Structures are given as structure tokens and as C-alpha cells.
Image (cartoon, rainbow, N blue to C red; front, side, top):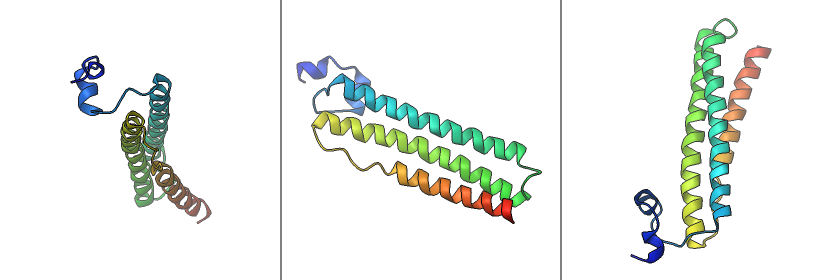
Amino acid sequence: MSEEAKDRDWASRTVLPGGSEPDPRFTLANERTFLAWIRTSLAFLAGGIALETIGDGVFPEGIHRALSILVIAIAFLISLGAAVRWWQTENRLRRGRPLTLPLIVPLLSLGGAVAACLILGMVLG
């Protein structure tokens, strides 16, 4: 084990094995991006809970339940995607490799567009 690896704690060596330490600014920027996605996920989760709680009289029962589940599912996917993206980025930074395309962005856009279309259909219909 190298001297650099010995300085790292067990969790760091297990989750992010190999490579070399990147510039701390990049690691911290990656962490801030992860936390921003987690805040977005929490906002979607709160929106899904609000839809389930308050939307009962606004939308028909089946649709309001489906919208709530969709928004909460989007929150789950954002949270999961944020963790995967953080891990991929950190590993690539450690190995000096190019960053991958963030698939979380099109997923979020698609989920938000579907939810907006459903709500628009309910308001207009």
C-alpha cells in the first residue's frame, strides 16, 4: 500500500480505491454538486407529499395519486442519480479520466415534462 493510500481512512479506500488524490477544489466542487442534486430531490419529495396531502380535492383520486407517485419517484431517481454521478466523477477525477455525460439531467427533464403535461391536462380538462 502506498503512503498516500495509508493516509486515507478505510471508507475512502473502500469506496474510492486506486488512483491519486485530485485537487481538493475539484473534490469539494463535486460534493457541492451532489448536495445541490440532493436539495432538488428533497424539493421533489416535498412536492409529491404536498400533492398527496393537498391535491385530494383538486384532482380526481386516481390522477392525484398517480401524480404524487410520479413526483416522489422522480425524487428517488434524482437522489440515486446524484449518488452515482458523485461516485463516477470522483473516480474519474482520481484517475485523470474525462468526465461522463450526466444522465441525471435528461431524466429530470423528462420526468418534469411528463408531470407538467399531466398537470396541464388536468387544469385544462
